[in-house]
Structure formats: structure tokens, C-alpha cells
Image (cartoon, rainbow, N blue to C red; front, side):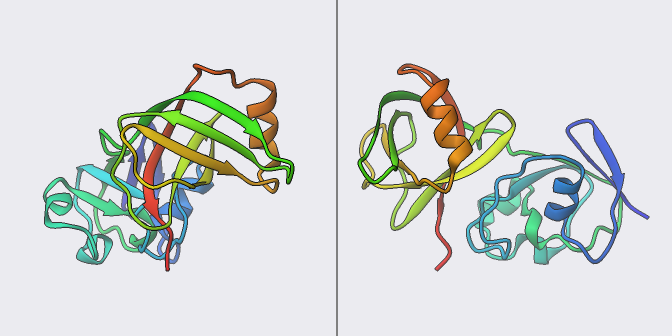
Length: 180
């Protein structure tokens, strides 16, 4: 049986569940959305070992050369594997503005170096070891991402209201395309 190592955690890979599911069962927060390989938000990188071609289906040749793969498509691991979040995937944005709308949604404006998305996109905010998928509600602008936090993300709304101040740095992955 093959062993998988991610962030100092090693476990036996069990066929029948994706690597994404098994990493979540181990307590890891891996950004994800569609769980089908369309959004590419669960992108990981091989440090040691190799993955099957099906895990890299839909990726660019540059991503494949960089040993990137989609954890949601990884159902078979034949040899020991050491993986990590790809370097350069985690971005940081600074809260420039935040306010609550009358409909209960919170809008947050981040200043960041990310400005390359198209269509309906979202980012995965990492807050207190939780991952929240949040819709981007503006077109790409130089260094600005506007976020819409709906009421159903109660814990994130509460954290933003109670603990997040203007100037606070937030980590995120993405932007990711919404699966169509």
C-alpha cells in the first residue's frame, strides 16, 4: 500500500476515495469547489513520487512540467508520494474597505498583486485554518479584488465583523473559475 505525505502527515492511501477526500479526512484544508477537476482549485504539487496522467488531465503543459496535479482526480496512488501546496499558490491581500449591505451581505475590498481572472471567479480565503469560497464581484482591476460574502457564510461574516480590521492581511488561493 502506498503512503502519502502532506505537511508532516503521512497516511496509507486507500483506493476508492480521492486524495482530496483523504487529505480532508486527515484534517487538512485543501481549497476545492467542484471536486471534478474543472475549477483547478485543489491543485497540488508532487515533491517525490509520481501521479497518473488522469490526475493531470486539463492542466497546461507548464503545470504538468511543474509536477502539479488535481487532488480531486487522484484516485490511484501506486507508490509512495510526497505532495504539497504549490509554491506561489497562496496569495495575500490587504483589507482596504469592508461594509455590510442592507441585504445582510458583507463586501470586502482587497489590495493584492492578483489581477488575472476572467468570467465568474472566486477565491478561497484561508481564515483560522478554515477555507471559505468567496465570489469576486468585480472585473479584473490593477491590484483590487472586490468580494461578496453572503449570509450563509455566517462564521466568516462574524469573523470579518468582530476581528478583521482595515489593513489586515488575508491569505487566499485563486482566483478560480466557477464550474460551468
